[in-house]
Every structure is written in C-alpha cells, then in structure tokens.
Image (cartoon, rainbow, N blue to C red; front, side, top):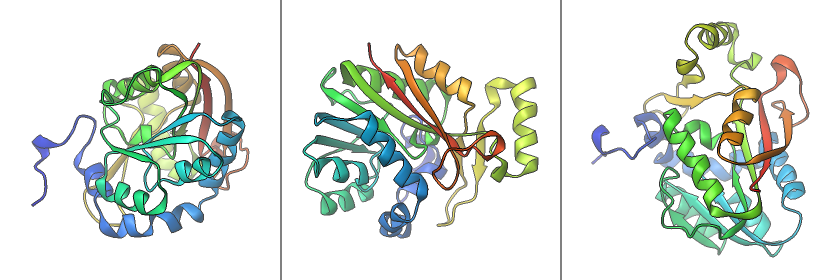
Length: 244
C-alpha cells in the first residue's frame, strides 16, 4: 500500500517518492547513467577533485555508480540513498557500505569521518524546501574532515532547453518573488506525480555552499553534452568546495 502524503520524509514530496520507488526507473537506471554525458563529466570532475584514495561518501548514490568507480581505485566508499530499491541494485553492483537514509538527517553517520563527499546528478535539487536543502549541505559539511573536499551538481534555472516560457517565468520570479523561484515541475517518464526539481543560478549555488562554511574552489559550467558551456546553453554546474 502506498505511503500516505503525511508520512513522507522531510524534503520528500509525492513526485520524488514515486520516482525513487518506480521499478521501471530502477531497472533502467544503470543504462541511463552509462548513456549520459553528464554522468561521464561528473565522474571526470570527481577524479580531479578526489586525487588520492580516501574515505568517500556519495549522498544520493542511486545504484552506486560513483562508489563503484572509486572503490575499484582503492577508495573506502559509503553510498547513501533514500530508495531501498536503488540500494538493492547498488548492492548487486558493488560490495561497499550502503546506508538507507534521508539526506536531511544523516545522524547515523559519524561526523568528520570522510575525506570526500559528493552530491551529484541534481540530487540536491530533488529535495523540497530551502530549509531542507540547507540541512543536506550542512550534513555534508559535518561529515567531512577539515580539508575534506565536496563536489556538488546543480541545474541551471535559466537553461535554454527548459523552454522560453519556463525561462521567462523563472526570470520574473527571480525578480519579483525570489523565495519562490527555482522550483520547476516536470512530468515523469515512468508515471506518478510530477517531479519537481529545484534549479539554481551559479551565484545562488555558490552563496549557499559558502554559507555552510565551505570554501568554493572551482565551478565548472557544463552543457547537455557534458562539455563546457556558456549562457543559456549551461545545463548546470559542478562545484568543488573544501571544508577549511
């Protein structure tokens, strides 16, 4: 029986819950990642950001692609995801530590115990509510040792591929109602309630990361092909930050 709305975890709406627990989506997720230029780009970015073996936590690990990649290189990896269905496939893919948890509450993991942390493929944007997204980033900060590195991916709210109507709507909200700007609902390919993703501007993403105590060291603007992009062709950003 489906979970009622009032029992949904903090930061999770019906659309995200439906997405994370759709059997067809989980079954095809690995193939989707293999075909995605963004998935290749963020792995390459993380290789530069995490240059030597250490302890790595992937926040919103899905079926474990990042952990599988770095575990094969000798890193001690922990994957965290809200979807037990995703984690079941991750366990079949790679033998590392998997944790079923909401990124808004990571109290089960010891603080200052990781050298590296990642939150990729717009996972942060899937979390509903600014206060909950702030908690996710605060948790990432707390999990890292001093000097630890954090990689974050966010989508661009002014990406041309969203369509003229959406982009103009976001620009208007950005000016008139900034607190409501950024949330963009899209129908799901797998059925279920619409999935709402929060989209950022580069400045907002950097300020949010800075406000948690991180120091932003690098920002890479990428297009849908995973290559550097500019202006309206920027699909999103990969940010590298450090805990001082």
